Image (cartoon, rainbow, N blue to C red; front, side, top):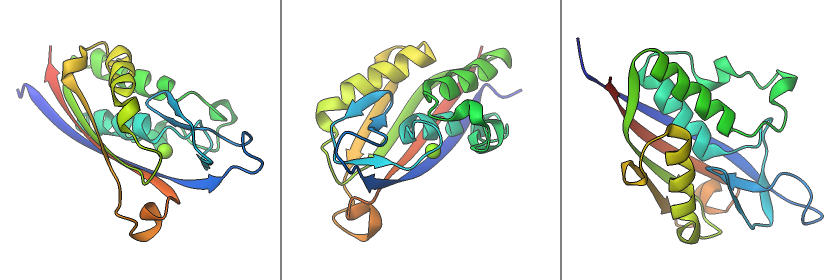
Length: 166
Ligand code: MG
């Protein structure tokens, strides 16, 4: 019986101008609200970082993905705080005897800058997963102004998790 499982998660949300500013969905990543003139197009709150980590955990367990477990046709998930999805994935893992050993995520966002918010994102992820902050890493990259992500029209996230049995 193996003692480790690895999982990868990926998510992308289109970012549309908020007109007038202040209306529409705010840009939220790992539960942290970023001041921005664009917001995600999403059924839930559009938290691409929580979504990618949720899928990484589910993927490690070979379970159905976030879109299958929480369909965007379900009105209960309208504007849903995505912490609920991450917590559900972590609970499923725990119920099967697995816990997150560590997590590494890369957020690709042209603007605003991620660096002032990274520690708050790590702290939120660590809190929801009930692990210490030093097991959670969040990196920010731009897309060098190339393609839609580089033009600020989308946010993209990759996440890798290692699960440990017991
Ligand atoms: Mg998503």
